[in-house]
Amino acid sequence: MRLTKVCQKLTGVDALVATDLSVDDGGVTFAVRPRWRKPRCGGCGRRGGQYDRGGERHWRHLALGSTILRLRYAPRRVNCRCCGVVTEQVPWARHGSRFTRDLEELVAYLAQTTDKTTITRLVGINWRTVGTIIERVVNERLDGQRLNGLRVIGIDEFSYLKRHRYLTVVVDHDQRRVVWAARGRGADSLTGLFDQLGEHGRAGIELATMDMAGGYLKAVGEHLPDARIVFDRFHVQRLASDALDEVRRDETRALAGGDDAGWIKRSRYALLKNPWNLTPRQDQKLADIQANNARLYRAYLLKESLARALDYRQPKRAREAFEAWLAWACRSQLPAFVKLSRTLRRHKDGILAYIKQRYTNAIVEGFNNRLRMIARRAYGFHSADALQAMLFLCCGGIELNPPLPK
Ligand SMILES: [Zn+2]
Image 1 (spheres, rainbow, N blue to C red):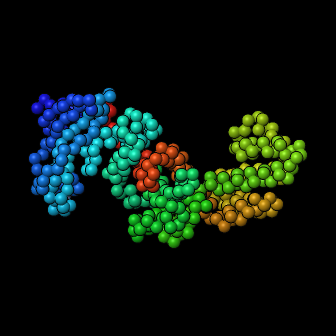
Image 2 (image 1 turned 90 degrees about the vertical axis):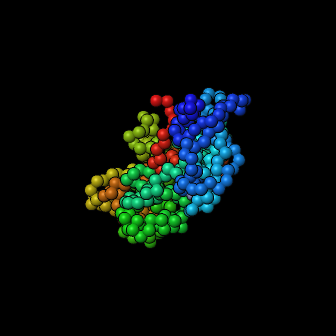
Image 3 (image 1 turned 90 degrees about the horizontal axis):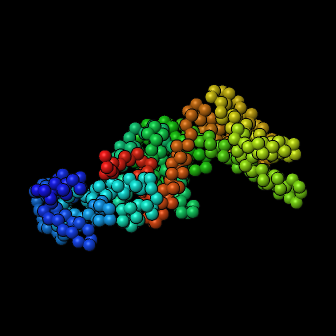
């Protein structure tokens, strides 16, 4: 009786009975059994008749300092009406796992926040095992209703393994969480989402944010005809920054060897920064550009005025400013901006939709940065499934309750 109490206390599991305790070099091992007499199916949890008894197994629990704590039991097999012959459910662990629920909870919790080395050292298991634990936890915890009632989504692609592999990630703006992910990028990778949403779910989506580059536009237009498309304003502005940088490089090249080439080359940060963040030196640099290089300064003004146009709150004013910008960029005689103006004109409605809707892809981009960290950590799992599990663990709104001292 005493033994059972101690074991229950240490594992946080009440539904077990401890029958023996052994101590050796490997640590402390409790011999246990479930408190219920009639075995339950490991697949569905229904009670069933005993089929036979398998060999003895060990489940690893949290360590007490450097001492490893284990549970030992020879599980029965159940003849289940639904699942066939299946190993029985045990109250201290998930089906198929050799770790207790507490240990898995702690590992998942650490994986949300901590680096790889710390986890493996702290828990004393290898990294690959961490990956399988995360997959199990996510399978059980991920909100099965997360695609129901979706209203505003954000779509983005995420590259990993040095841009050799891609994930398409979909977030729910309302709940601020990742709700869907799939391998690959571009229109085809969204097919699975549209299937899962069903007709009703697809009809419920009012708005989709994305950037112009992803190739998701066509797929969304076809499958979500009622959804308003909002192009991410920050992506639009980034394109203008890229165009500005192209002008800077062209100018550097054109002036190569001359006195001006050097300082123009070094003006990158002054040009790309937001004007209110400039240091006095960068301010001076900008003044020099204004005085000495009309083309580059024009490019700078184009970048800034595009941002101002998107700052307007009134759709009419924004549209006027944006139209004026397009006209100016088009006759700016700066090839990079002429090209950009054509792209932006094509996507005008989606860009201006931002003014009214105020949605950007910032939340997706925020997740993207987190993803980058996750991918670095998940490297070594060697599978897209494991990376996705890690993604849902960290950005899918899963709340964990690891056994911590109160
Ligand atoms: Zn079953």
